[in-house]
Image 1 (cartoon, helix red, strand yellow):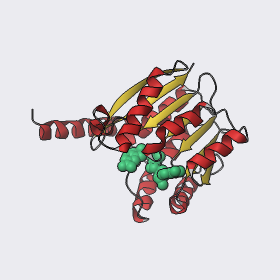
Image 2: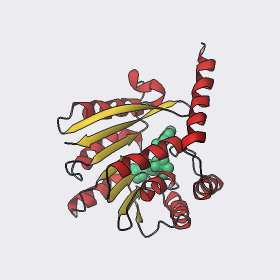
Image 3: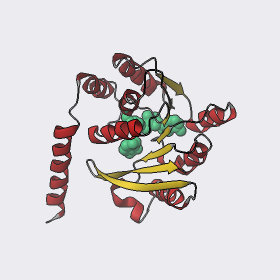
Image 4: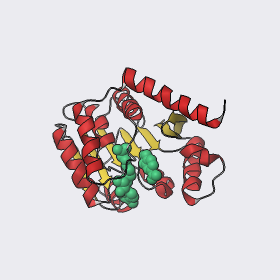
Length: 222
Ligand code: SAH
Ligand code: DHB
Ligand code: MG
């Protein structure tokens, strides 16, 4: 099979799984629609990955979640739906416009009580979370600027407990991690290697089909 045929087949498989398991609802559709209308980049997780994140969070029995990189709140809604009634999610976002769109999407989803969006640079917000002893979180989802993933991993390791999950999005990047040619791919590769080698973690990188092949790195704190 040539590359175009393979790409088409991957797309059909992704759609097959989505139609079967991850049928959208009005709230998720509206979140994507309003994000698009507000000019946000369409770099949210896919419906299938969102479903996977929700399932992992439910399996983990998570009560407190930290998300790094909110965008329009599409992934946030999946995570917050996995929380019990008294659960809480803090999401960090540098862009005030993104945060505003996300707050509206989360409000419409009826999840505002559980979700707090903090606006600022995640480096600084993470330092405050550590300083103020706001951990531990049961699930941490790293999905902001890719160059900072190794630093976000360091901070995350200070905000977890035994049994927590640390999840990293976009960790295969079309295969560019195999032979990194830019800082983003290099940082992503370093992130995966550090997770793989860290004796405090049990982990895997899971390739996922999107418009191109990307992946989710999943680590459980021992
Ligand atoms: N989790 C979202 C997608 C996040 S896209 C979803 O799947 O629905 C990445 C987001 O990280 C963007 O909104 C971007 O503004 C934000 N971001 C980039 N650099 C950041 C930083 N240094 N601190 C906080 N957020 C940042
Ligand atoms: C990009 C960022 C993401 O979080 C994502 O899921 C896909 C792409 C990006 O910056 O290109
Ligand atoms: Mg992402």
